[in-house]
Length: 267
Image 1 (cartoon, rainbow, N blue to C red):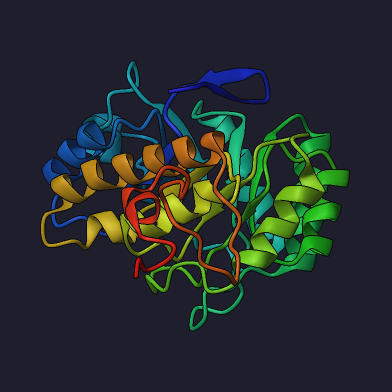
Image 2 (cartoon, rainbow, N blue to C red):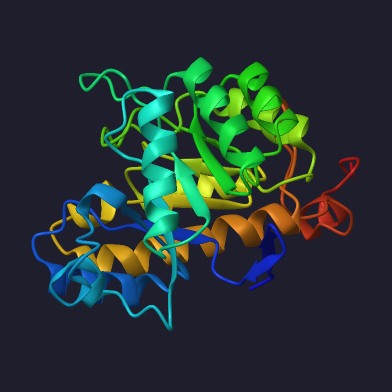
């Protein structure tokens, strides 16, 4: 598969995977392996920074995966900035998936607070990957402050509703125009959703719940990887345009039925 780059770092897999909600850490480990993902995101609040050998990190091979700390659980810009600083000080990374979600009921991001926190963190040298809405105006602001990716949601976190507004995502992709990667984050419920995201021209997708809560998370992780790959291949191949008029799949010239049909009846 073709490669893509975030802030100068190159990856081959276009599937990013979260680490929450799995029935067990061993299932999570096996699902990560089946996904083929290279980037694995983990909530800083779930990591025992003082005893890594007993924590979630003990099940993630840091020689194999690039660990992306996230600020899940932060309700304000201040909390998110503080959490990112804590992760960096503990030696996790200066990369951060920025999440500022004030409402635990909807889990929708706060666009204003996200931009505010992103600007602070970028100015402090962080590589910021912000989770945001599918509003292209917010995407422009995040791009302007120097974020390393734009990560609009497909639909609300954990809903599995897929991409009900693909045109909004397409508009963000066109706005960003390749200056940074666009990663569709949240709402993906099935490999077909991941495939659609890639067909729209997204650079990657991030999936957690759809894999972790599947009946067979390991097999679903593999299915998601195939969905991403199919969508990417489709995008690169160029989809045919939709038309209102049907057209035959085979050329009409040389049809036996037409050539053999009598033009006039003999007397």
